[in-house]
Amino acid sequence: MAIELSLPPEVHELAERTRAFIRDRVLPLEDAHDGDITAAGGDTFRVELQKAAREAGVFAPHAPIEYGGHGLGMSDRAPVFEEAGYSLFGPTALNIAAPDEGNVHMLAHIANPEQKQQYLVPLAHGDVRSAFAMTEPAPGAGSDPSALATRAVRADGGWRINGRKWFITGADGAGFFIIMARTSGEPGQRGGATLFLAPAETPGIRVGRHLDTLDRSMVGGHCEVFFEDLLVPEEAVLGEVDRGFEYAQVRLGPARMTHVMRWLGAARRGHDVAVTHVARREGFGSRLGDLGMVQKMIADNEIDIAATRALLTRACWELDRGEPAANATSIAKTFAAEAIFRIVDRSMQMCGGLGVSGDLPLARLSREVRPFRIYDGPSEVHRWAIAKRAVGAAKRALRAAE
Image (tube, rainbow, N blue to C red; front, side, top):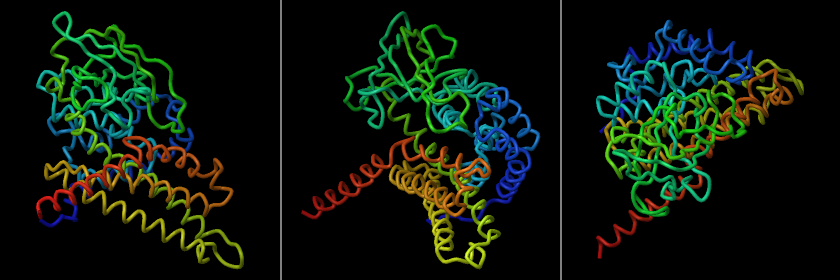
């Protein structure tokens, strides 16, 4: 079946509106605060940005229509999210920043009607933020989720949860948490995880320190979170008991691709800044953009942008067809995370001293995109998974031929 590359007119129009909104309204605010959303006002600033996005008709492109969004599928999200990502504050403005965008997707697919009313409705509307609590300090769950150590046991007609999480994006100020905890088996064993929903004010939830990471554009930071005899009712279980790892994949594959979309927008901005600079800057008897060494960097950026879009298109097509798309999303995420960093790095190089100064946005773009090679699965883990699937397919073919 052929992949449809043309955009529906309404998606093209939404992408153009998003482009205008980001460049006219959001970029000046990002520049004024050097991409630091806490310095810009944190949640108060988020509310103001999202109010402006609603007025511009670009708010919540991903959320189901019945919850106030535009209801875009994965392929149609790509151009809109890319335009939003052109500013570091753009995803927050449209309510498509991590982790809320991925949590909207998960709740829409897994939550029961009561849970959707309590959690999805306010999240899709931007009334609250959320956090997805899976990652733990070593030796707990990190790149290997089977090491999950946070434990939930049945108690008092519900569940008692104990554990420590960290690098939990948006935890400070979140309205609720989606918590992954082990309900059977032992750390290192596959399966046995369950997802739980809990309002942030529930006794037993404590947000600790902010981890001092490179990036500065995410409201609520990346925090330690402690669950200390947290009691939740049976109704807090998201989906079914012991199927948490399976449900996490409903979120993680699409979320990796929406990360690609957003960061590709940021990389494009860096490239645009650099190309404009070298087209104007004179040196060595010509414009810098006419010199072969500079032209190579420009061409390599264009190639990386085009290749990232192509891999993203394939992965989104598979996801829209209801396929797991595990291999396609791993390939796209790995290539994109590295290509996006290369694009920004080359753009800095083309701009010389200005590239590492505060006079251009390139230094802060580099700060923001570098962690993507680690977040949502390090490149090395994705490469291992890609190779494992390829070798596994070859072994199965050999056995079938015997």
